Image 1: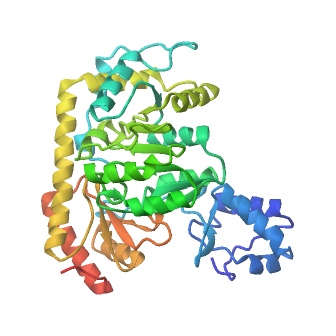
Image 2: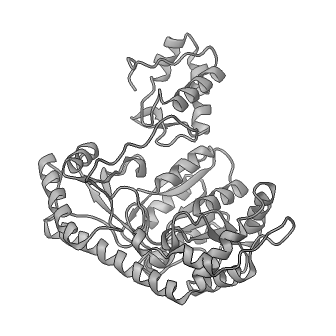
Length: 443
């Protein structure tokens, strides 16, 4: 936002500045990404001291409503943690929406069939929070992937688990190492908790050990890592990279390691965990992408103290994740036909992702997607590429919400529903758009 923007902030104190900006975001008068005036200019407009304005902006940063980056100033965050009057832009009629990161609905099991044959419990206060059979199956799955699961609980999705773990261990102002590019919703969550994001660079094999080491030097208290199916780049740890990262972390037992295995069995690659032997750790395994996004359930394993703290916070709030929901997930996990369907879905997701990568490579375009549901395509300028592809009937996600300062522009394409014939047409359109914008291409 420039100093000439229609909406003008009004405030007579730091508290009023915070309230005015927050209310403007709720009303939609200040939108995500809009730039605020500099401290000096805003102080002059309001008739306040720069110290007072800086204090108000600091509180807005702590709440995750604004972000401040070197050379980019202060702006409204991409997803401020307040309800707003804004609505998502509709997808134009006839356009293919490849922007939202959703699984293919045709590859999800039908929950109605499982519900029809599942006796639903009548859960009362005071009963155990986790169905024991569900816990047993979760332990088997996690231990098969090398994750210790003696202590675990059930949470309402992977992000809910990560939030509860950080609430148990982190305090506002703590520095948290995150992948960059990385999951936009995770960035939003951490900002909303008043945590400071410390970017760690990555390649197709995950976090770069040297970059993680630098983040540790900067004083991080926790590391959040996606071991496979990384969103948005598709990066996946291999055995060599996991060993290198474990070596970097070995000298810092006080650092909390959180793994987000949000794709689980459909990621398309084995799990290589960093949690083994750690004093403080947590690992989430979500069912959202394999069984359906509306099944808001994930299993969270961790060290005894972490799991106990998460369970304690749950008891102070919702108490437990619905046993009806747990029973449904248990029924789906125990169904042999569903297991075959999930395996087949993982194979199809991998084939669709690889097909687009091959089509792009044949046109000299470098892209990334070692695993998962997305392909990350570097571009010269995001808004122009997104707009040009929209004119050609493709809706893709701009990379900006997934990037921290220092990372290069890109677009994210969700390939979960992308048919074989579509892949070639989309790759051709991307090539034409990149040629038109002068983006660099590999030989």
